[in-house]
Length: 265
Image (cartoon, rainbow, N blue to C red; front, side, top):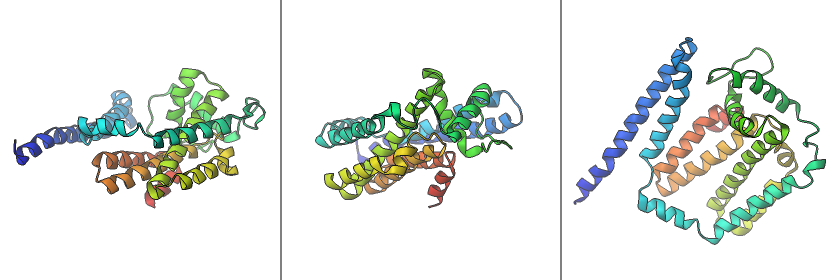
């Protein structure tokens, strides 16, 4: 098989998947309009259309089986153990003496309590909303993504403070991981990455804010993940990484005001 035939064979499924992504996006837009015009079918197809569109986009640029196998094999190396060590260190440092910490089960931050009350009384009992606009309580469109992130955690493990804190810790672990990956990408140094890991773990504001429970915490992992994938995508000429970086950047718009500032930057 010559190069032109091989290229055509490679491009055909990609064009099909990109076409399906575009069609799904159109369905998302039309169902969104239907949703806000009180048509019942838009409630379900609005999120489904968006999820299908993003899934088709990712699959369109998914590396081939050989590249995927090579990528998984590259995870079996000392650097992976290095990152796992620091993630474990981060978790242990934040759970140490949790029973006597100010964010324990005896109380919760005011903003977190307000978000949880809104989630339970409005979001979980209504059809899907791409954005919530309320004239009271300070709940606006940029908090919607955070609400839908917390929902499955609370539904699966119970509406309690411990579940809320576990969901928040998962967000900060993700932020921590991509911060280390970015540092390694920029400096390629175990020493520099270790120093950043220590600073990020014990920086007082970040340490306490881990369990604060506000929608701003949704922006942090999305911003660093987007930056990591975009930088890696341009550096390695990877369309797959660029697609992931673009999706994360788009979700930043729905995460918080900080996410919008990141996109503008």
